[in-house]
Image (cartoon, rainbow, N blue to C red; front, side, top):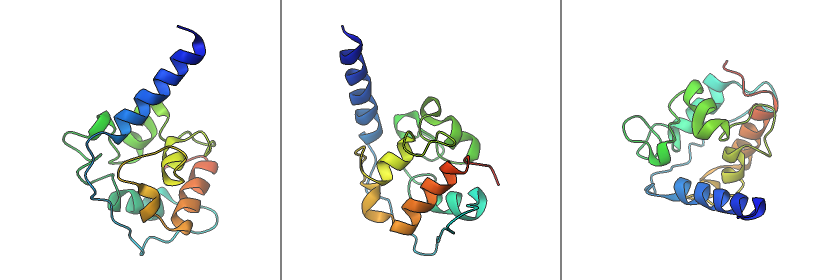
Length: 132
């Protein structure tokens, strides 16, 4: 198998794993408003994640779908071999790709994320995805 074919199989496997089994339990939390800079994990990111997939049926404690646990900073940074959030690299982070729907995810997070929330997650990752 060529390297390109192996890469394509890997990407397809990631998409299938991340799409498998989540219920449409994602809700938008209009109360989570991100600043333009100095995004805080504890004040902005975790409350947003908690209202979407982090602490609900999909990726919360217990049996997280696709073995991706999003319950706290450590689990988010380590999730999916460190590819859900890549500090300093929002374009390479799967979370941004799912929020902006360049990588499909079920439920479709981009439907439930405001532009402010998408930009806020992107900014947090760009700023180094700090635990603060």
